[in-house]
Image (cartoon, rainbow, N blue to C red):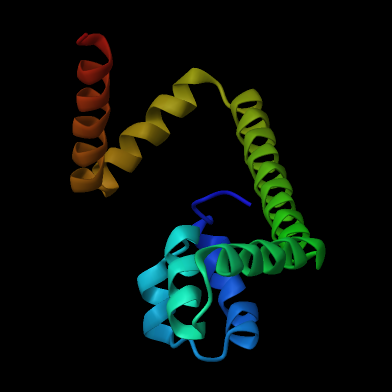
Length: 140
């Protein structure tokens, strides 16, 4: 496991860490913030171990946590969310594609004009944002 444990993973690991090292408080875990060196130092201090003992204990527990499938669960959930997002984007693109196929340019211009008249402030803000992005992308 890396020297810096990913923040999302760290939050999930806290429950397991609390069960392994009951002397550590929530404030201790907040202070550690996913940094393995800080965790090793804290274990060394709270449990009176040498640096090597604490380091071996932390390494063993982190390997045990990895093997338990908790990391695989997080990865699977992330992949599921990514697949759902991809499906929604494809659905939106298909919907936009069929909309554009069904309309001619005269209808699109009229609908755009109606939208600007219905939402003038929002339209202005969108125009300013697009202008800003275009200006920023051309300036190097």
